[in-house]
Length: 270
Image (cartoon, rainbow, N blue to C red; front, side, top):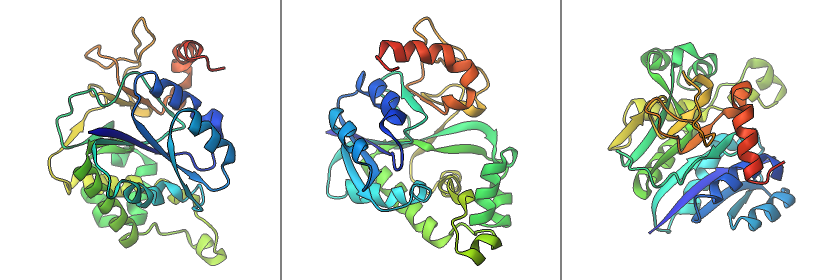
């Protein structure tokens, strides 16, 4: 059966996802689907070059981070895939085919290496969705990154359904000034992190496995303890094994600049 990679690029230009796609297509020839805005005409042309599907939405780019799960679920219904990877796009590049790794769970989550209470962003998202009591129950848990999740078709379908249910029941509570002026509160843009962490740490999807940031196949580098590259400029974990996916490399740009520049040059990216 086929595998599938799902991502979103609403409001982005083609340059923002070029590294994602060129590095991915070096290792992976299977199906890819992007969520894009109806007006993203240049992105449509760019995605066709890399043989990608796309789903159009009118959802504002600040809201799509939560709304994307509804579109992901709709896309996979009545289809048959072996495994599905859902991931961000702008700040990710690939070092191998992510489906070749032998994952331990039916669904696999990737931890960031810091406790929720140590991150002001995750603290805010959970407090503004679930409230103080739930926050206190989760505050000592290690942050799960919603920007990379991989699993079997059925487990990912269940995960999408849960994210959708929780996002509808526990909406992000806007600051009063935004409520009074009917404006969008940008602070809620990453609120899917709250739903993902609640689902993950309460083990609401059967046979899940949580990979530590320092030893797993996916690196979320903002809180990564050690940045180290091999002779091929690939980021390696503490077992000296190259990660399959590198996420948030732009947040540690001083450490990644030289290696990423060399990789991009080999991929013919300016």
